[in-house]
Amino acid sequence: MKILFLSDNFPPQGTCGGAGFSSFYLARGLKDAGHDVFIITTCQEKSGEKNFIHEGLKIFRIYAKYNLRWHAYIALYNPQTVGKIRDIIKKIDPDIIHSQDIQKHLSYYCLKIAKEFNKPLFLTARDVMLFSFGKLATRKYLERFDARTNWLDHLGQVQKRYNPWRNFFIKRYLKNVDQIFSVSFALKNALGQNGINNVEVSHTGLDVNDWQISPEKVMNFKRKYGLLDKKIVLLAGRVSGLKGCEQARRAMEKVQEEVPRAFLLVVGDSGSVGWLQGEDLKAAYHSSEIVIMPSICLDAFPRSNLEAMACKKPVVATCFGGSAEVVEDGKTGYIVNPLNVDLFAEKILDLLKNPGKAKAFGEAGFQRIQDDFNLTGHVNQTLDYYQKALFLRQQKKHD
Image 1 (cartoon, rainbow, N blue to C red):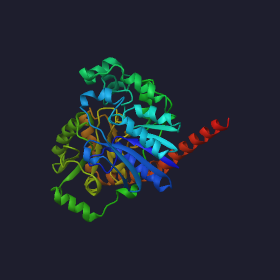
Image 2: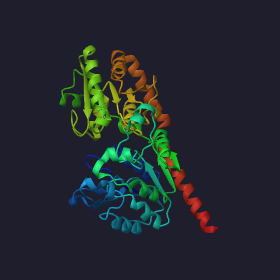
Image 3: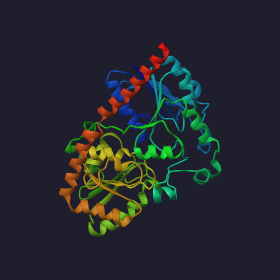
Image 4: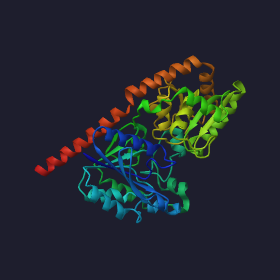
């Protein structure tokens, strides 16, 4: 089977986020299952535009750059990319087209292009951008998990950059999709509350073998960053207010009053050690006592929860979004409202002061990833949907 992924960001780009890496591991898993996998992605430097092979995946990288003040318009139709996408699809002639992340550079119009070729078309929603202009942190969501939005919410998010036609056209383009996947039930519910249906949940999968590292590398990492005498609490992800960085800082101030050696290590684009990938990121997880995920927005299914549990670390995670679908409260970590800084600090302290409990939570989390969120299961579930769609397409031809 020839499978084509569409994804704005995709490894080996330098600062690829969680969505890009989740797409990469799924693509690699499909390739390892014996399928030909192609990727159309983008870059923001002209010199980066090229076709190449990375870990057996055939990648077509398209140059796309514009002033992000026009994001709400260019995300619908990007004249820099749509013609090239059509030409590449025609050249590849894939059996399946799967959109992973097209909200910034490839543009939603490529769903219409993909449908022109009469191929089964899938889309994975990894965040709220199908109905929101940015991360969802409205008062009604944070107070009662009501994800419904209106034009006033959107106008408040982007102000002069508001495009009143954005969501209308996104929903119109989504009609071309055979099946929408959501990475969590929390996101599926939010999509439904905003009039987007035809959604099935497909949790991200992870191979725990990808997250093992030698003790020597962990020790070298600690030496490099002066962490040998610290009890590390790790926050992994892009540094932003809605990721709960301020809540984490305030909670850690309380934690350090009782555990002076506690240290908040922020791994992100402007965090304690900057952006980490590969062996350094693994070492950061393995160096930590606890991993925290304090988002104060609908964070659909943060990959760092999975990565922490694959490294046998307990997680103190947000109640907002899909974290509670992987982190079991009181078994593999804790689920808290990070806006309650006292409770947040209390749960961190509980695990720092009780290393036996922290170790047991970490072991339970590791087993949970192996049993319920493994990459093989995610790949097989995806292939089942692909094959069903192809079968139905063949039936229609015969009818």
